[in-house]
Image (cartoon, rainbow, N blue to C red; front, side):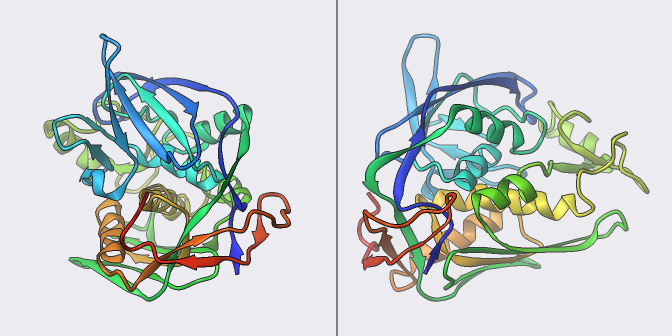
Length: 316
């Protein structure tokens, strides 16, 4: 059995501070990502000027909205939006535990990709904790459908993604990307892919109070017959690569790394979350896999002999 990250849980070696603008709110936002203890997971701490705050776990059950971005809420009016790129960076690099303190209701968009977060994590460093990593092993195929979109999780050794998109423009058309995810592949093939949008939708988004912070500095803008950004695209298939990035971030809301294959067609944030819901609604579809405490490691990718424990009743 092959795991895409190591056998022990991890956290950051030191704090990370980043500032930017929310792509939808247009408001300035600052985040402080701090090391956290084993088994605490990824958590958001929404702070106010009085030194108090609200903790929201990065968990699929916290999802309050998945239109254009993923929004997490405590269920009592406190929410944090556009979490997917940051979660993708942490999950893609194998960071299990961190506390993300944020002073606004939206994670800054940075350049529209996960790369600024990846660079910050690489600079801070990742350290192992003295606790075995837990994996969520997919035991049977589950499926979710949303109109013409569908997604599945099925058994697989490792974490495999197969994402296909289709847009009615020759600038995108049909694109498909398949890969077994590792930290190195995430850095090299996924992290730099930016979010994208259509110029024809801009006025409608603004009227709905969305995309107020979008610009050519953080979004690939698609016109009638060309990419508006002067530098063009970073990859010939940057659009599907960004959809893979979004999927990595949304699937991080499982609460532990997945051992399974994710397939989606014409998907997005809503579909990604529906697939996770379908998985956890079926107690026979998944189990907790705990890595042994001693294992050979090679550059963050390793073979694991894993013991299975039922995880259906307890996600702590």
